[in-house]
Amino acid sequence: MAEHGPPMVIDVHTPVSSFAIIYSDAEDSLQTIFTKLTQKAFTELHGKPVRAGYVKYEWNNSFYNLDDDTDFSVFAWRLKSSSRGHDSSLVMFLRDPEAPLPPSTEYRNASFYMFRPRPISSPPLGHDGVSVRSGKSRRSGTKEHKPEDDGVPNFKKEFEQFHSENGVRTIVGSIGPVNNGECRPYAVALPVFLLRLLTSSVPGCSVVVFWASRAVRMLLKSGYRYVYISRKFAIKHEFIPRDAAPGHYGYSGLVNLGKWPITVGRTRSTHSVYLSEETHFDVILGRSFVEHRQIKFDPVDPTDVVCQDTGEKIDCEIVILRDGRGQIVLVS
Image (cartoon, rainbow, N blue to C red; front, side, top):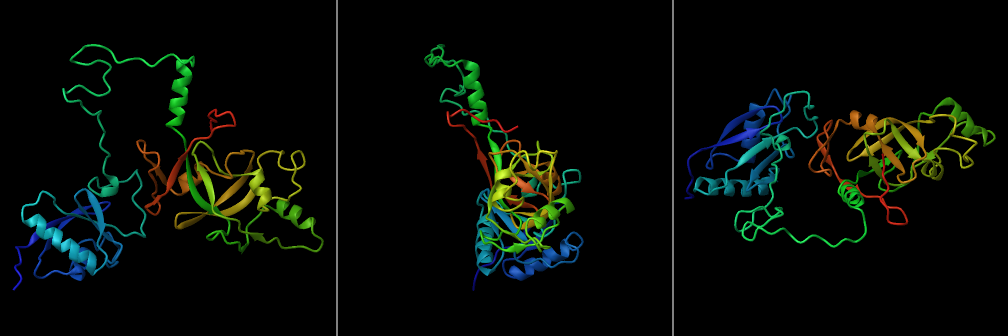
């Protein structure tokens, strides 16, 4: 007969609350745990039953899903290890993946793994307890050797170092009917003057059909107000006519190209798109997009980007632009 330990108390944290459940190795299964969590968080989940994708747990400072019987077998073994006096304790997290996370203006449970404050790292210490970054040695009292003068002013070196460590955020998404790089026809709401301009170039044409292009790397920067696409990108993918040469179109103020769907991650949202003369990026996602998707930026890790309307973490890359001479190009 298998030996079963006494019941255990497991702490459970949600985005807005914390509670505990009793776990019995002899009686509980994956479904009974789901049932207990459903009952405890009935109001917060609006009556939805807990199922695969709702539960994670922390073990040895790592996070694991609790979705199926295989996950549960590992989960149960780790609980037994905890009960036998191992240092690691197990904590559970519960969240409806389809529900948005609470905004920063509302209460957030600091014990929930997505809201934990990041630890501030300190400089490593040497064998004698002196910081590695220290300019002096406690033993010798002498200063570190200075680098040789290469003729480059210090302010320029500092400028280069600052911007080499602070590039711009870019994410991959799609604008219009893009689906895995395939081209599909798509209807879009255009301003009347632009619709007339497009249809007048083709006799008898009353409907404009747009075709999708490809997934695009987009600049994500709240310093811009709206969503913009470059002139080259707009002409290539027929957002504007191909004869829209400078001086004939687009230089009479800010040009609205209509409302277009933009897909980032698993979520599609519609935004007003404007023509831009920016040449470094095809698409710029400005403040209107950031506010609509409730995007949260991490001040420590610039690649940590979370869309709080869905709770989805977006893959982000930092890009540093340089011109043909190797000089850093600033994107303001």
